[in-house]
Picture 1 (spheres, rainbow, N blue to C red):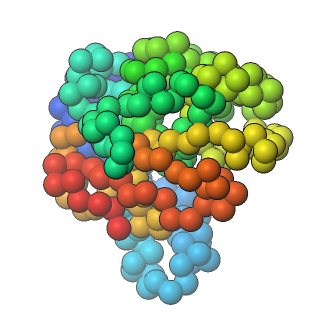
Picture 2 (cartoon, rainbow, N blue to C red):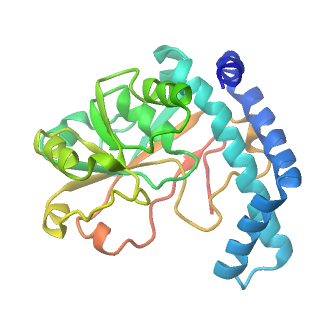
Amino acid sequence: MRLLLGMMWLLHWLPLPVLGRIGKAVGSLLFFVMGPRREIALTNLRLTMPELTEAQRRDIARRHFQAYSRSVLERSILWWASEQRLRRLIKVETSEGMAPGKVPVAEMTEKPTILLCPHFVCLDVGGASIAMEASASSMYVAQKNKVFDEVLRAGRARFKPVRLFTRQDGIKPILRALKEKLPYFMLPDMDSATRMPNSFLSSACRLHPDRYRAHRRCNRRPGDAGDRHLPAQLRRLPCEVLSGVGELPRARYGRGNAPYE
């Protein structure tokens, strides 16, 4: 593991477009050689998208493998690149009524705030964009390998002070942090092993840091491996969103700023 992490550290010196092309190539290779994982992805797509052809489902699965591999390599930049470089690479996009290109720190910290980030391959970009501006809390899965766990925690806590909770910690420390007006970076598919009171959720203000739209075709378009920026989109969501999530906001990525559709 130390050797793999050392190789990953070396990758953070590469330009983002080069790293993107390497990630896409690695993802294509993994799609070919990881038969069991490929079949899991295709089975899920057959069950959830029966209206698509098999060729279309294979294309979606292949592009996800590419996006996932690319995101792993991009973490080398997010965990080890200088803050100056990250500020140059990450482009914050805000919705109407919010200060353009800025994380709304004052709004996030004046009341209990939940930052809703769908748990896709992009989540560390949104996390880094927030962590460079404000302290926050979040839940994460403790890794079995202690060395990797330490690197992961250090990478996500390298800027402003953060509180990282595990499932075993339960919901109480999250609620305490929110009462202290420490924003909670929420990954909706993370099972906290308990239920959060609906009355509390309905009273919280929510922001949405996200790089992808939560849509069935959420991966990068072919040819995007040379992109030069890592966008993080912030958008206000209505207070009813967690009781019935509808279509989530679009996110934009890369030089052309074309939306994922």
